[in-house]
Image 1 (cartoon, rainbow, N blue to C red):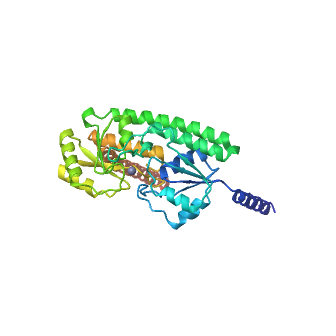
Image 2: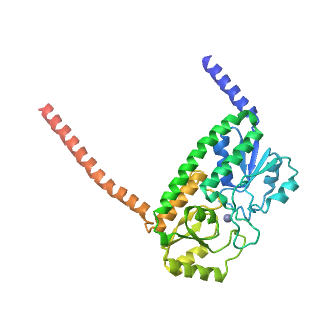
Image 3: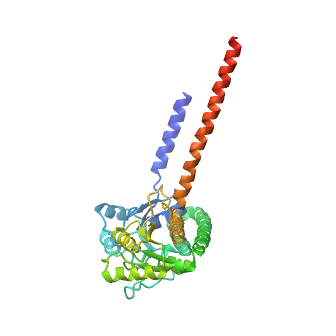
Length: 334
Ligand SMILES: [Zn+2]
């Protein structure tokens, strides 16, 4: 009887959890999705239009997105010209959701390629991340006042973590010899990062991925690599690495790793959260530019070396135990 009561109790509980309608927040990128998740906890349903690994510059909405947008209570976008595809799509959907630009209040960098066009990659600076988080927190409080204290408390905790990440990044970049602080990537996603942490930036494409690489851009990179003597250049998780790989081959420098720029990595990966993305990028950049790209593999190798030693040790113990047992058995049977 007791068992049936427990089952009944949990069924009612599950049904009541399902029955509670959480507010729907639709965001444009995986980066905004994670920051929102950190503050919203389990109080909000969050959907990102651009999926993990997607390119937010070139995204083409799918029919399912129209349904998602029509059910939204709040839409959070990056702005600064990132989501050129979004406005018309929102207008056509007829949604009544509040729209918030989460970069409001950030001092933007102007694109060097396009006139009057701000660089959208403001999330690359962890201090800007705090402004993202604060704007998102304010939007959530406005949307769901009953949980205002909960959102405020989560924001405070998250802000502390972002401040820690900021210090970590600064210290690690400071460990790279000054002349090697040159970051060469596929597209110009790291201007905010470079301005903040003191790296010179060079890329094949401009601030958007919406262009073809020109021979003049590639030649410019050849001369930068030669002049600076950087030991490594970098590919990005959302961009075809072919051109960067070719440049690395031609100039005999290493690929310093895959950087997360416009999307987080898969949820379980190191770059699966916003802070994880900044930290992992910085570790890859610092290791490669300091010329210790094989640090990780050396670590693995030393672990591998220790395992045969362990096996020898285990075998000796086993032989001693069996021998001892055999000796005892012999003695007892005598
Ligand atoms: Zn980008």
